[in-house]
Length: 607
Image (cartoon, rainbow, N blue to C red; front, side, top):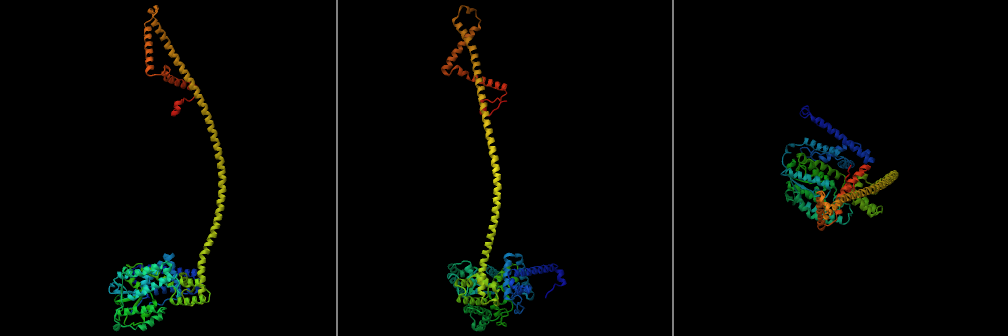
């Protein structure tokens, strides 16, 4: 138990407020967790709500600091895991927060970081600033599978972040040749499962489910197998053979095999043998012993198998003060606490990877479940297709975990049938929801149709009224147009009469004036030509008039010869001007607008 001293309060006055804020966050997190239990797992709420705060704390301590809480001897336990049911439900809760509640997920992340940093209090931190240049990290086959992206996005991101941080701190990353051989065998098996349509008698492994869900074809898996060496080079993971030194640094592999079998219970002898080979190789690389400091242990095997790590801790504790193997989560915590700013988001990615791993059935539960499925299939309780769904699909695994919470004590002879029922219910549920939505949609559509019909009728009445008004207006327009046409016609006729009268008057005036000038002049000219005796007594202007008349006749004759036309045609412009003047005057006297035909064409109105 730690407390802040008076000196600490003065040095860092904000610490108390930070602690209070952290406690509020954790209380809110516990509240969210209990609400999640009540909503999702009401039938198990009595068992799960006995100590929700304690279960959350145990989960975080067990998964976040499995190695950091070791004492200086490196052998103090990090705490016991909670019940399998609570492990599963908390994993689901964390995954739920990551999907829909980033604030709540941030509280989990803060709790993990706090647990990691709190565990550092008991550690010798003087070596944390040292480089990991002398450390060789060997990755076990499952970790390689995660790093290559064959287990899903969460595991991929967490593993890649861990590898990059280790390399950034100076460590070197390797894998054994036999681990690559095991990896190739796993991929070959997965290729066969996909080629067989996802059918595998003993059930699908996580890698099989990943390829099935991602719709990876057998040819794609074959290409991935061929590309593994190049991918490891890109990740800066170097392959190495097993070292010699069996004689000098031999390990009791028989005892080791018994230990890990008791903790892991392998279903495959080959997998157990590969793990023994890896641990024995690390032992020989260390030359049979190692100091208690992580950065000085020289070589370490990184696996995702908690049981394997627990078994190793019981082996040769005197010679190996730092265990031969660590989990990937433990390594991530050790690396992060050494350089939290470099791998700032590493805890977040490890939390998600841990949560998704905790949502999968363990090997014991899965083996028992497969036995029950086989029994039901042999008795004809479930058909072959249902059996495939139960043991070879993700929904089958998910339904099993929901039915049993990952705890074997909840598994019974009827569990497989209940799982199948849950699967069908989960499939039917969204369909039923969709049907309800369709029903509601139909009701909404019916109401909408009624509203639209009423609106249409109202609009139809308005349209009828508008149409009647439009027709009346159209008739009025047509009547007005007819009246205008009539008036225009009358005006045109009146204008024609006025114009004709003006033209006749102008023609008469011009003709009269012409005759008045021409006849006397012609008479004088004739008399002058005849020259009677009395002409000697005539005025002198008679001669002038006669001469002018003669000139006039000569001019007319010449003009007709060259310009053609008649005298009347020559006088037509004068008649036109006179006619216009007469028409204007008559219009003014009659009070009519003075708009003549030419002016109408040009749009001109004369007042």
